Structures are given as structure tokens and as C-alpha cells.
Amino acid sequence: MSKIEVNQITQQCGTTLTVGGGACKTAVVDATTVTLGRCGATVSLASGATQSGFGRTGTVDWQTGSIKTTGFTAATGEGYFCNTTGAAFTCTLPAGVAGSIVSVQDYANTFDTYALTITPDGSEKINGGAGSIGLATEGEGLTLVYIDSTQGWRSVQDNDTASAGSNFVAACGGNTTITCGDYKNHIFTGPGTLTVTAGGSPAGSDSVEYLVVAGGGGGGGNPGGPSAGDSGAGGGGWRSRSALPTAAPTNAPANLGVTATAYPITVGGGGPGGPGSGTIGSDSIFSSITSTGGGYGSHAAVGGNGGSGGGSPRDAAHAAGSGNSPPVSPVQGYDGGTPSPAAGPYRGASGGGGGGQIGQSGTGGSNPTEQGGAGGAGAYLSDPFIGPTAPSYGTPGPVGSTRYFSGGGGGGFLNPVGAGAGAGGAGGGGAGAEAPGATATAGTVNTGGGGGGAGVGGAGGSGIVIIRYKFQ
Image (cartoon, rainbow, N blue to C red; front, side):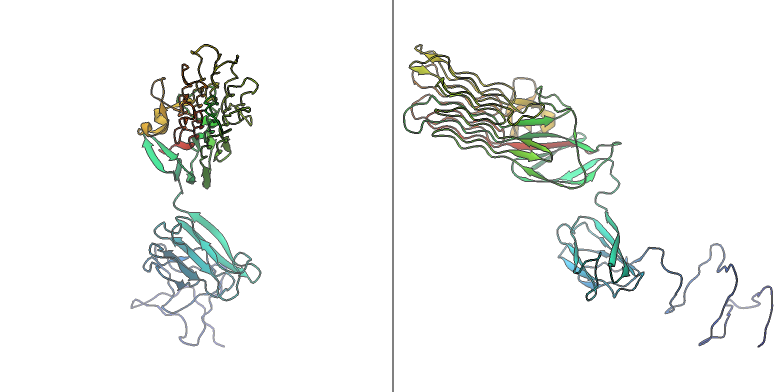
């Protein structure tokens, strides 16, 4: 065996220095430390050559020149931008070899519309389970590494670029979204979903203000006679939190924290009115906040319990319904009006309670000036909470630039020559009626107002949910 010992090999001419014997030969460099290249130089594998023993650093080579728009089979060590703008499609993983790595990324933030399906080669597993997985989150990216036959391909990184790096809450959803200064207001007039795409941070915002109003109760009515002395229903439960002026004492002590997830929104419908007793309104729900439907008005029974209570009928033997039922703190509404203190030909039923006030009692006796009780006033928020289109929601209030919700329904009156039926409470409460067999006024839609009492009770108004947060 020949042996040559040198300290340094220096190229004498030309631009290429070849070390080794060529095809079918092996060149071995044996030392504790081996340095290839020099500072600022490039070390490359020849075209078609492969490497072994070096491993990967957990990264992939992104194929930026080949955006995927239809189904394809991935190669190990590569990352792909997948554009599902036109349709959903499938990425098939390569045959699994320990250490293989593949990445995919939502190209146009459309995975939530058209999902990307990741399917393994043959019967190999993904995260220990058989079958495919779907990526259906806007902006999602996923990196998978093949481990072994037990776990198969394992997801080692899952990201959502649609919400990364935000110090402020970001969300979508609602029938109407209003921008007011640095705040966004999502208004739900029916069921839906508030999808929070960024939970924010304390440095910007990481919580939301809210108004959750339940459906108002249905007013009472006389099922078989000309009487209109039937009580008004309670307004839907009112629960709110805002840094802006609001009706005390219903302002909660702190905003509601949120994270990047979907929050189902329930907007309660109003309860139907009588004949007979009306029906309680339906609850409205956002996250941990539930507002209870307004209590029903009645004909010859106690008023219904609820967010606000239904009023008592003209019969002094029957009590009013309780508000804030079930109890929460701060309270979500008030009791209905108490029974008339005296009997006689002129007998007024009481009004339902509101989000900010007890319902008024009806009056009774032989004096034609007796009348039905007014519904309790609702609670209010200042216009900026709702946004510059505030006139579309709630009812105007007497306190500055405010909008009222959850007004109680007015009580009916037995004798048509009396002073009259009770007015509806501020916040969408329906007025009672006094003519025999007349139909009372319904609560206003999306205010949670209670229906008025009459020969035929008015229906309650549906509720509303409004979410407000700082977005910049």
C-alpha cells in the first residue's frame, strides 16, 4: 500500500481541484475536525447526488415556484403552499421513512371555505390514528414528521397565520359589524357565531364588552270574554358590561376575556301573548353570560318569573312575577307591578317589570280615572356602544344620547270608559289595551321588550346581543 503524507494541497492552475479517484471510488477524510469551504463560500452537492448521515434541521425546502391548486403527492423534505380558492383538494403524504418531513400552508387564507385534506400513503397513521385529517382553519399551516409505525406521521407544528402577532382582539360574525373609532361592534339580531381569530394581549386588548338581552315575555289576555284587565309581561333579562355610561346597577365589574375560538351566540325570541297567560321569552347567551327570557303576563294567575317579572292581573288575589330569576349579580331585571289595591268596576292590571325598574301597579275601584299600570323602564347604554347607526337598535331614551332595551309591557284595563291602559316601558315594552277584546301592543323586535296586556296579549320582542372590543 502506497502512502503520501503532506501538510497542505495547493491548486497550481485552473479553477477546479479534484480529490478522489472518480467513479466507483471512495475518498475518506479522517480527522477530528473537518472544514469544508471558507467564510462566505457555498458548499453544494453535485446535481443528482444525495447526502446521508447529516440529517435535517427540522426545516423543509419551500416550493414557492409551484403553488398547489389540485391534489398532489408530497415529497419528503418539501413544503407546499396550497391554494384552495377554487375547490378543496387532497395532499397525499409520501411513503413513511423515519425522519421524513413535509409541510403545507394555506396560500390564500381559504382553508375555512375549502379545506385541505392530508391523507397518508396506504395504511400508515397520522398522529397515531388511521385515516386522513382535514385543515379547515383560515391561514393554517402544518408540519408533519414520520416517526415510526406506531405513531406514523406526527404533527410537530400547527400555526394560524391569520391571527398571528396581534396585540388586539380580532373577530368576525354578526348581522352587522360597525367600526366606531378604535372599537368594533358586532351586532347579533339573530343566532350566529362570533369567531375570535386573535385573542390579543394586555398590551392592546384581550377582552370584550357585551350587551346580552333576552326575549321579552308575552302579555296576558282574556281567553273567553271582553275583559282587557290582563297584565303586561316582563322585559327580557339584561346583562351588560361597558366602560361607557350605562344604567346602574346592571354594569358588570369587568370585561369578558376571550381567546381565539368560536363563540356560539343565541338570541332569544319573544314569548307569544295570551289568551290566558302569555309565554316566557327565550334566553339569550354569549359565552358564560346567559340572560333569562322575560316573565309572562297573566289573565287570572300570578305573573311569570323571568329576567324581569310579569305584572299581576286585575285580580288582587294573584301576585306579580319576580325579576332577576334565576338570580345573578348585578341583577338582570326587576319585578312586575303588584296587584290593584281595590276591586270595583274599574280595574287596571299591572305592568311588567323592566331591565331598570319595577313595573307600575294598576289601580282599581269605582272611579273612572283608574287605569292599567305602565311597564317598568328598561336599562340603557350610550350610543357609542352600539355605533353610529344606533337609531336602528333599541329605543331612544330621555337620558342624553342613550338607547333603551328590556322595557316592561303595560297592563290592560277592564272598563273601556276608564282612564286607559298602561304604557309600555322605555326599551320596547308594548302598551296595554282597554277596549273589550282588543289586542295589546307587542314588544319591539330586538329590544327584549315585554308584550302589553289586553283581551289578546301582545307578543314579546326578540332580544339582541352586541359585542364591543378595541381593535387598534
